[in-house]
Length: 415
Image (cartoon, rainbow, N blue to C red; front, side):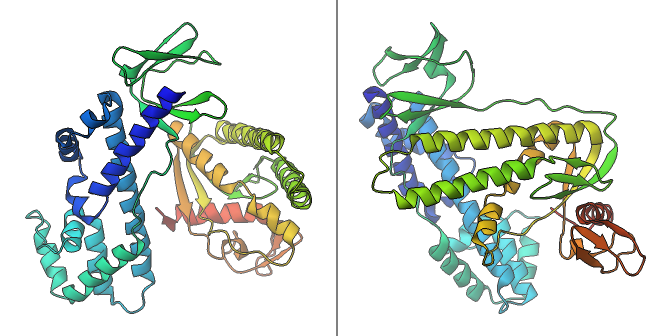
């Protein structure tokens, strides 16, 4: 474990070196594709100073670069949201700022106070936009927002490291992992018979004297000629999915959700009362994990059944808003907070990609108050939707799913 922790600590040092040297605005021009940074890191002498094998050193470099790129993407998304919400900008000014955020060369030039030089096809468009706005004012705004919201990355703990296929081998029901010493490998017995031939991540648990191996799995994509239907679905807390035809999938989902929420609530109350006497939480975390695994297994089973029965070519689903603060009933609020809608959506997206099914999000404003028959506003009561204009009465979730399909087919969708 000490030898593995030594690798993890060096891995952390390399990442922090890259964060410090290339994580600021001056490193933007070198992030893509990243080979300039690789060459500079080779010439820096850091690998020789740490006596670190190349199989770990360059993985640490590109791991850090991936984090930097992700942080810049998050910063741009935050600034773009602020631009859209800013009522003090004209449409021309917003258009110019969006253009700068979208083009990496322009964004980097503005932050580094350099002239913007783009390819011949794009330069005329930039010049046209610049004539309509005060570029100095907008450049200063962009720099100010980056200084305010861009986070400086730092790896505080040595929790693990990535490892390439050249640095390990399987034998004797275990794995041999390369160390910093030449031609020396550590043998770790495994608890399963899984074998991988790609890059892995070794997560360390020194307190347990154990490791956890994380591997990326390659999933083949299937094409089904009989998947030709267009299906609108409505997500619910008690019934997981309802289609526009009224078919329900995950009817027992509400029972799993309620049982899990009630158990968590009771544990929180018990823990707050007996905090001084509670010496460990191992049983709590183990049972919580079993609850989640049971619920997730049920969700995946029902999603598979949904695709097999409905045979969709396109699935339309409402784009749900962010979670909002609840009312006064804390018990209900707690249950809704634990709603697994994010996991359901993520797994549905994954399974649709695997089965070559197109998943389209539909704008959901006022969608549950409209009649799927005539499109006018109706009333919801006791789980049913009634329309005084056309006289229809239908289950609320089925009506919502039909509206999702109608809006999706009509093209009122979001990317």
